[in-house]
Length: 202
Image (cartoon, rainbow, N blue to C red; front, side, top):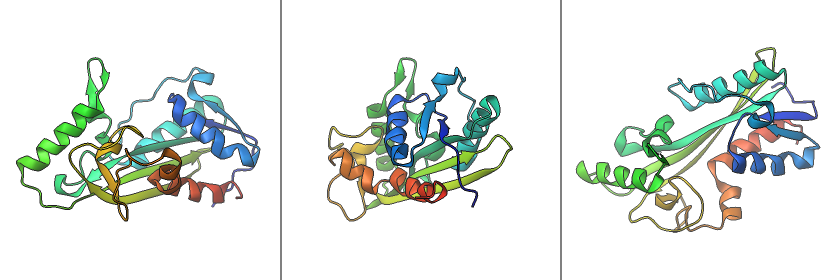
């Protein structure tokens, strides 16, 4: 594994929350973090059919444009009874002309499961793939997975996206009901980040 030895890392996201999360995570390593907006980077078209392909597109585009090592992630939920959907299209299922509506997306997901009489438990997993890319074209990949099941009705006001219908394995609450710090310790992103720390020397 190639180790990251610099002191400045570009996180290839326009999502302020995600950027702040990474800033806090990388602070103990003395790494300065900037986001895509700090460099006036456009959002590249995500044309991949897997999490790793989309994360690579974003990381390499940012590294090439700036000459800086760049970190990106792609994540989503895979539901077994829907043959792994929505998967890489998780955010797309929530798109509306007025922005993303995840309540609508969760309702659509439930209706699809009901329409085909999917048996319980309706097993699913949240996936997160981090890609750290260098300007010379090299990259390292760090995947994280959290197994669980989708439930209905929606439960909890915490988190974001599909969190209110995802109950992680070993818990009787959804991500939407879970304290966000507790969720951040066990989530798919936390598991990917633990691997990333090895590349940072931690």
